[in-house]
Image 1 (cartoon, rainbow, N blue to C red):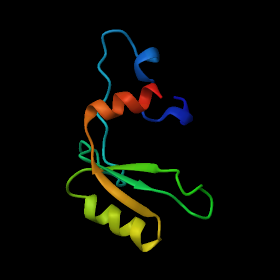
Image 2: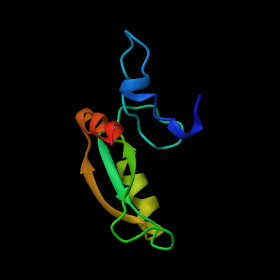
Image 3: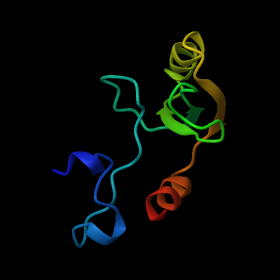
Image 4: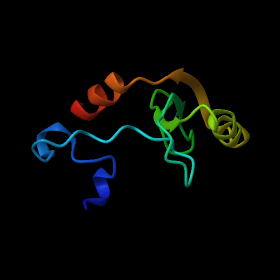
Length: 91
């Protein structure tokens, strides 16, 4: 396993006949399908326009937003769809 590609191998490196795994919640221990994307950045190390993304299921959205907000990192939360995952993998 390549530690720099923990989200899977993507379309080019995918095994034939095997579907891509669904995007899952970023909360530790949660394997639920992602419904939300939480955009954030750390102003001490990221440029203002940069956005990092954590994915969240419906149950953990509020917890993850609170975690990021408390640290001054949260920027916005948007709905997440599987088609966005394919677009993000390609870029």
